[in-house]
Amino acid sequence: MTTAFDSLDLAGTPLSNRIAMAPMTRSRAGADATATELTAEYYAQRASAGLIITEGIQPSLIGQGYPDTPGLHSAEQVESWRKVTSAVHAAGGRIFAQLMHAGRIGHPVLFSDGSLNVAPSAVAAEGQVYTAEGPKDFVTPRELTGDEVRATIEDFVSAARNAIDAGFDGVELHGANGYLIHQFLAPGSNLRTDEWGGAPENRIRFAVETARAVAAEIGAARTGLRLSPGNPFNSISEPADGLEATYTLLVKELSALGLAYLHVMEAGPIRDLVNTLRGGFDGTFVLNPATEGPTGSDALALVEDGTADVVAFGALFLANPDLPARLKAGGPYNSPDTATFFGGTEKGYTDYPAL
Image (cartoon, rainbow, N blue to C red; front, side, top):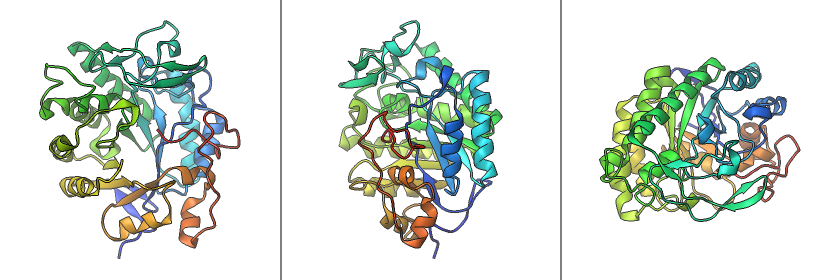
């Protein structure tokens, strides 16, 4: 029987176990959206994970959605991440950079020139975003032109190339949680009538073409994608009766690209769909399961019963940097504090909740 403590060949990248650290926004970047010494310490502490997936890293200036999040679109940012990847590798870990374009999530005050956020369509998300000036209502974004959609794909490609140059083992494209790729997938935020919107085969096009272009640049074996079907976070609207058609079609296209892995965040009671997507994807399947509270040790059974190849843990990794060892020993566990937003200073133990 395969267990979560067994090693795994991730499309040529050897993982010491099948326990992943899920991506979690931290909002602690340094000047000019760079990684810091604390960033390196934080990730190196957690290098016993089979795979670390970083916090969301914006691939362009306009891709930023929250204050003090890091980027991978300047030479200074690339250089800053080298000390992070070196620290993780020195500790025996493997680390993928999550590339996250926030799309309509964010606010013009985050941009020095007051630029308007961009999205598939000019549809504002409901709710507010935290900024240095306090909470602000989401604004109506500017709809990307066809040429700008293609340019945005190239931004992902450039950031992926920068990630490899910075020493990352690969990249994960953030197609979940209501950010840009998810906004293209969801009919509530994508009202386009061109090749990028409308029928499912058009709404999935941005995700597929971005994955295809990134894989062509850095290799499919170093490219993963995260999805969260039906997740309403960030005001996403995806009718339940259309989920299977959209996501099975998407996963079929992604599987044909030979990506390193598919990472599904299970938002609610969608295990039947998760199993369908698992069966339709030929590569490694990573699952961040739906749980009441932080994902716990019971999730290890998902590897044993074949539901997933790798299980991703989020909040529990914040309070337990040596989580794989604690899981193997059956505890004890420090309790994560996910109630404090932007307030923690104790080496990442009190952190911004996963986004």
